[in-house]
Image (cartoon, rainbow, N blue to C red; front, side):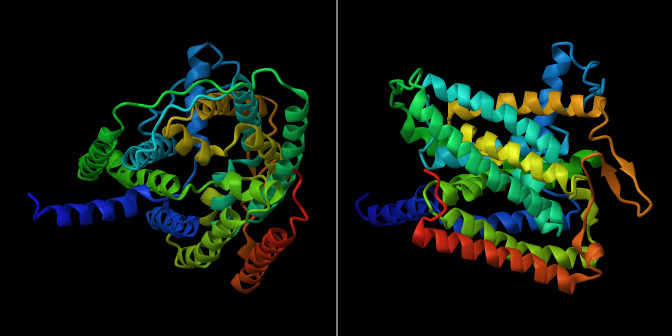
Length: 409
């Protein structure tokens, strides 16, 4: 018994290092982009908003608003729809990571925070509808796909973050209702959490195996989504990776690590993704929303304000909800409902109805599909522009870290 103790302590130390101690956001960014590139090799792409919108569609249909919002009478199952499945497995990955690190716990917020969560989720649903996606589908994925829609949404997100922080500061100075923090209780079974987390990992691996070897071609094609979505959730939780923080922190605290991690992910991902496009392994246009430039810019701005009040973006809200944050569950509910409802209204008013122009590109009243290699006649100028933007962004963040010149709080 005593002879095995050193071995056990060594394994315990390794476990703590990998599953308990926080990962660097830079490591998380690198691992995240590798998983996303793996999806792209399979002909898929990472998105979040489409899955949340499906959940909202199911809710609106259940309460009798399906016809008014022009929602399809036969909706996909949440476990079959690609983005919904990705969201569900992302939640599972973050939940497993929270259990294995013993960080899961029901987190109750002051009453006013739930109001901000509902407001933030509603604004994010409206912004994502206009931009054709959230910080994932409207910014990160189009950036990997070399679309200027990503950079227009980034500008909108930055402007929205500044506006949102100023509004939030005003509320903190002028509203006192509902700010008392509730009493929290310590869970008694925390020591069993790692075991539950390991069981979830085993369950996901079994699920992936069963679907991968299924005779149903549709299920077999979804197996990669199960494991990829789970990995994304696990990575994001372990590294606390959050796109909302990347756009918010430079203006809030001048801290730039999350932003620099995002820049690193794009610096690695853009050239690697370009090889997939050049080898025609995936069509770049499948992940480029027809929103350049008005939809991306103004949708990003509205989304940016929303994510400040919510305290997270779409993917960030998912993984933080998975670790027990009740405010973020409120955010997700209103995000899903708002995204479904506003999408229906935009279709009814034909604002986001897609058509195809003479160049074969989809367009709407608020934008058109845009792909830099086609716009700039090749990859040389595309690389130059993309890396130039990333360099300017890094210089801005690094300068602000030293001077705090652009903080608004």
